[in-house]
Image 1 (spheres, helix red, strand yellow):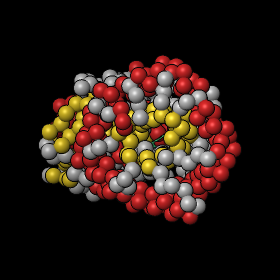
Image 2 (tube, rainbow, N blue to C red):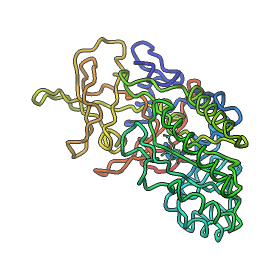
Image 3 (cartoon, rainbow, N blue to C red):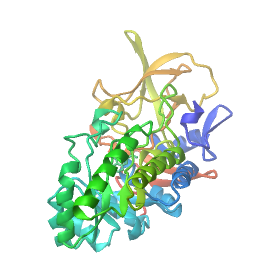
Amino acid sequence: MLELFPDTAEIVGGVLHVGGCSTAALADEHGTPLVVYCEETVRAAARSWQRGAPDATIVYGSKALPNAGLVRALVEEGVGADVSTLGELRIAQAAGVPASKLVVHGNNKSDEELAAAAEVDAWLVVMDEPGEVERCAAAGVKRVLLRITPGIEADTHEKIRTGHAGSKFGVAPEEAPEVIDGARAAGLEMLGLHVHLGSQLVDTGAARSAVERLTGLCADARARLDWTPAIVNLGGGLGIRHVLDEPAPPSPEEYARAVSERLQAAWAAVDLPRPHLVFEPGRSLVGRAGLTLYRVGVVKRTGETTWVAVDGGMSDNPRPALYGARYSALLATRADEPPGGVFAVCGKHCESGDVLIERAELPAPRRGDLLAIPATGAYTLAMASGYNAVERPAALLVVGGRARAILRRGQTEEPSPA
Ligand code: PLP
């Protein structure tokens, strides 16, 4: 079970510790629900990506958790940021992401967002639709990619699939030559193509299919337009393990190496010049680094189910309700006790769908126990709501026995942008 937690997780005297800090002490001092990020695990994930694709640019898909404290650690590891709103752009700036490593996305960019991208001279703006050619040129954007929807049904939940035909993102491959030509005519530096196939992918299958489609498209673009991409951005998507009976995805290093090698081989086979690669990992950089601590309240039995109610729920982690995401849990203050049964973990919100875990094997939980749910670093806090007028949880970054607040309870942004 500890393998689902951050690298530094250990049980000391029956209590879960992370980054050298006791989770019991963190919860007492900062309250619950509390999201705790292990800095070493974030940095290790960044290094793993870089080992797998040393010549590529790695940018953090900051929607996984747009937070300056986390991004700052990633910047120190040489990672840039992919931002899809003005808010994410401002957080990336506050964290010190250099403009030369800023990639600006969005399927519905406002004029203000395009102007901001131009003003900060972001490295790349990824155009999502033909109309953005003119709008980018008018806003003063210089360098662009075009997002392609290659028509690939990635093997993940339909709500987090993005590269299928009919997706709201990007343009179909058939439309691409006209947009590429238009962008060049408009004076934009039309530098390359982007694909993002979906999230929580547990193998390289979808990325390999995307490489095949892109190779065909680029060989065709060379013949028809005398254009080849200097940059290929393969998006994010690599998944993490949330429960032990889920297949373990490849490591970032394995994934990045396999996909880059595939692309280089495919490109070489049709004699295309080698492009600069970009990856945009979100979940695989911060997902396993984060865990959520909850205080147990009511424990009761209804029908066949023994419910363990915690002091958060779908407001701080909507993933189970949104797309049936599965999680596991550890009683953080009695972590060395044997299981006493199977329990359902629910939140405190006014919906029957507010269930975080349907079946968790735990020592019989009691009011006041601390429950830790691992692998909650991505798309939990980022999607938190104020449902039932609850406050968003606080978040901490822990390292070497010290904890630093990176998000205050109730806040939507980091407490102290640089
Ligand atoms: N890039 C783009 C364009 C995305 O839309 C996303 C996520 O939705 C990501 C990167 C990050 O994806 P993941 O967190 O699955 O790595």
